[in-house]
Image (tube, rainbow, N blue to C red; front, side, top):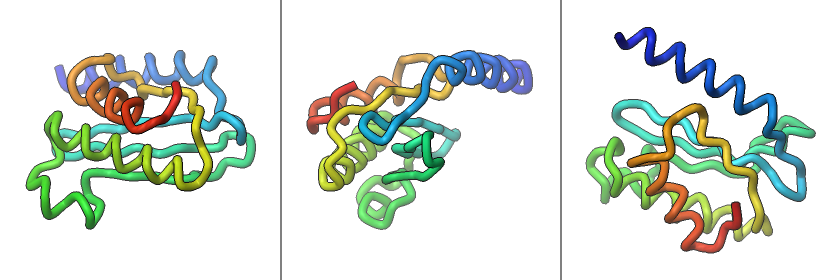
Length: 120
């Protein structure tokens, strides 16, 4: 069961990545989640560089969260990555959900980033 779910996510992610491409003026907002943590990167695909990132393992968040595998942690990571992006002058991004369903932690992270000021 676990392996089929993972391969299905990889298939969805490959299908999505064929259509998404982040540029310097509108970079890609990529999400990866594990069972215990959630990770976000804002990537410029034209140069292949990560512009900014945040995760539930960041020193700022780790002490106050406890666990990084819940909706509360996803909201905090979303606000943190949005504030870091806005500090670097990034306002618009292309949303790449990484093959995960837009539900639970993924939607909470995206909503928190939108509330902070990022445009998808």
